[in-house]
Amino acid sequence: MIRFASYPSLEGRVVFVTGGGSGIGASIVEHLCAQRARVAFVDIERAASETLVATIAAREHPAPLFLPCDLRDIAALRAAIAEATARLGPIRVLVNNAAHDERHAIDKVTPEYWDDRFAVNLRHQFFAAQAVAPGMAAAGGGSIINFGSTSWMAAQGGMPAYLSAKAAVTGLTRALARDFGPMGIRVNAIVPGWIMTERQIRLWLTPEGEQELMRRQCLKRKLVPEDVARVVLFFAADDSGACTSQSYIVDGGWV
Image (cartoon, rainbow, N blue to C red):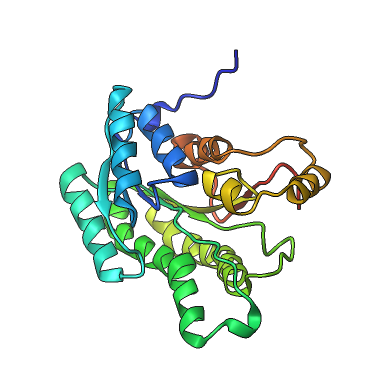
């Protein structure tokens, strides 16, 4: 029987997760609640998010607080962070997970579409970090976990705005780590490869794609959201207390 790590430092710790209603984000929320953290999460999809809350409560883990939010609306994001703080206490961990890897052809991209993709995949990470940093510093420090993607490292085609935004997460992570370090706030990035969420399987996994995955990865198995969530736990917990300004790749050895 496989046994995974338990992190006592996460018990009772307030965590804010973006895009927590489905996919990798839902697994992150589930794993944090299983560690008995106090979790708030935002998502644009109400039905999936409310189902997740009910599922976690049925397991007799601390139920997360779901706050509906479109992360393109920075005022709404700030309000959600303020509400989570008021209801749960100072946020000590921020997981900037939310993203959307919508495919797009170069000749179809408009300035408005480009800005929207950056709003969905990058901009909110900075403003969420900006919003939680004062409270983290006052509480004695914390951990910010940004989400990148190996897609730009692998030079994947068909979505240049997404790749550009995800490449920028590395620069944002290192910049924030430098500026927030004196406040005791660690900033790291997790960089997933091709993770088999329900959406990825439904939209993109073809027999040809699966063959390519097995050819390129060192590990000859499909990666699942739990593989990423367990890494989040480490960077959220005190066990990673000396780690900052890093990008940790979770891709089975593809890139």
